[in-house]
Length: 331
Image (cartoon, rainbow, N blue to C red; front, side, top):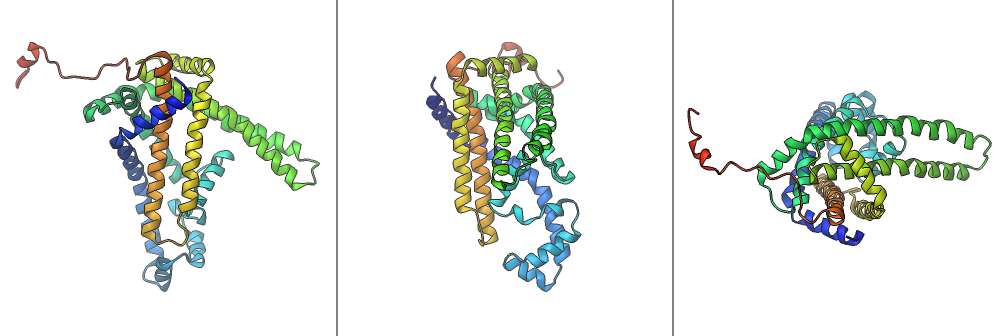
């Protein structure tokens, strides 16, 4: 299967799974809801019935905003101007590139999101691999089967990213970068050095991400129980199939298109309701892109080593043998 064929097949599989898109979007909203309620209460308590409340409701009031941040704690400290519109995207990208730590309350939600994703990803991959409706029972059965396996895989992924973001990042930006710019007098040259180091850092991060993606694909499609075996198999598939890198680049381009769209329509002075609607549309599109990565990778793997719709694990079914009729109350 070619890169373009896998990409198109992935789009088709995602399009045929609207309830999966809706469910993942809803899980994101539900995880963010407690923080939103806490922030709402802090802002409401600070504003009270003052005149600043009316001014804040009508538009951005930076004087009040700075006053709020000066006394805020917990989730309130995350309520900075950089959360508005497209600036939030840039803030997130900058945080990853510079390996910036998160406030405790935000980190706890990120961990909860990772835990929920670890539970749901098995069912999502199973649904996309079979390319047909599973029903709630089949979906959550797959989630339950793979969550423990992916927990073990997640430990290995955490170790790999820890080496990259703690040790490699520190060596590149805390040791090599200061040495490179030690005698520089042109700021533009220092900027290009830093951009080059970002690229150097991104290459192993993306390769690790790619290998773990295909480890999950092989774990689900082939019903692998050993995550060390799945990781090894995923790495072999990536090495033997350079098309995996091309497909990853094509999906990344789709993600950049979504980001570009949000940049064009991100609310500036829009009303609160319109800003919320645009923000939720962006989250839905991010969910679609996330599923597109998985669906196209499954399609490429099935096209190269298996066949479309093949998944080793059978769907769970209630026993239909005559013995099932003997099961009743009191048994």
